[in-house]
Image 1 (tube, rainbow, N blue to C red):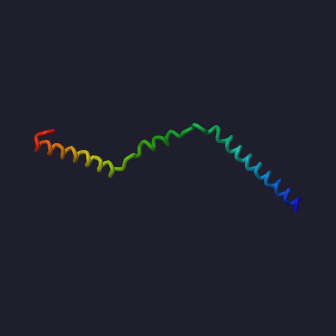
Image 2 (cartoon, one colour):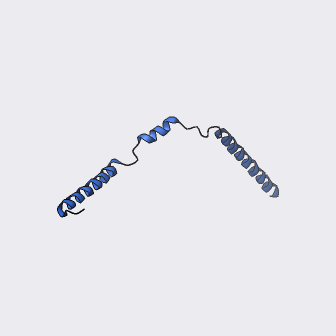
Length: 80
């Protein structure tokens, strides 16, 4: 049994070594790609609206509606 446990321990160490080497290889291949951004990817984000049309319409309705109500109230009372 002790021989089997030692053998399993060696297999685990070998497996982790392979995993580490694979991760290092992946990291080393990726290190040269850092900072390279596709020019077209940034223009796609700029073309999209950050606020939906419904939210924009609601905001305009609230702003214009409140200003109209304020003008009507000012005209009725004569005081600002």
